[in-house]
Structures are given as C-alpha cells and as structure tokens.
Amino acid sequence: MSRSLVERSNSNRVPRGRSDVLKRLGTLSIEAPALTAAPSEEEPQLSQTQPLPTVAVEEPCGLTPASLKHLKRQRDALSEEKAKLQVELLDTAKQLKESRAFSRAGFACCCVVLFCFCFLFSFFLFLAGGETVRPTARGTVSPKGVGTLW
Image (cartoon, rainbow, N blue to C red; front, side, top):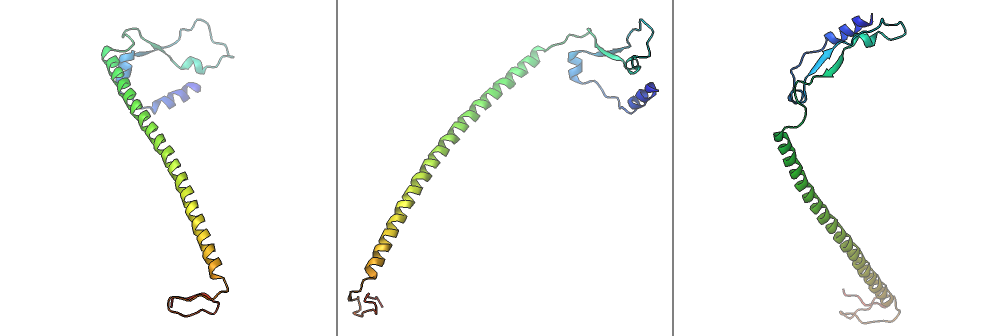
C-alpha cells in the first residue's frame, strides 16, 4: 500500500536536465539497498521502497582553475566594494556629527536671540508703562502718557 503512494507521488514530477553544478560535482546514481535478511514486521516498509542515492566516483569533485579564478575576482571586487562602503560610512558619520554640533550651536544661538528679544520687549513694556508724559514726534500725548507716532 505504501509503495503505491510513493509511485503516485513520484509520477507527478517533471524530468529536468542536469545542471552544470551536478556535472562538476559528479553524477548521482541510484542503487537499491542489498537485502541480507528477511524484513521483520517491526521495520517500516517505506525505507525498503525508497532508493538510496550514492555519489559515483566517475567524475572528480572540486573546483576547476577557472572557477577558482572567478571566485578570486569576486572576492577582490567585494573587498573593494566593502572598502568603499566603509569610507562612505565614515564620511556619513562625520557629517552627522558635524550637523549635530551645528544644530546644537544653532539652537543655543536661537536661545540667546530669543532671550535678548524677550529682554528688550520687557524693557520696552517697562518703559511704555510709565506714568510720565513724554512728547511724541508729532507733539501729541497719549492718554496714558505714552507718546504715539500718529
């Protein structure tokens, strides 16, 4: 019963051509396991129906000189790219640090200007709130004693 399930599940597979990777690494050959004893009923029968893949020793495994050369070129290109990115990261960190320092200085400058403005405004209000009569540019006097320009 389990064999028919395995055969049905394998029947839906589409055969594919061998890739270059398998050609370089070697071929897979499928061999059925040798049965030395009669199977007992305790052992699952699924393991007997599935073939075990083994690597054939017909083709050598490993990297070719061309593939090694290609990998070295990739490594060198990646090392250069890594170095460029590290320099860019350091420049960006430096710019960020400078912008933070500038924003702190700008904030401090804005605070000083705001303080001066508030001080001058309060001083103007203090002067404007006095009860003394002051002459204005046109010579009129306001009801509170503060001169007006119109």
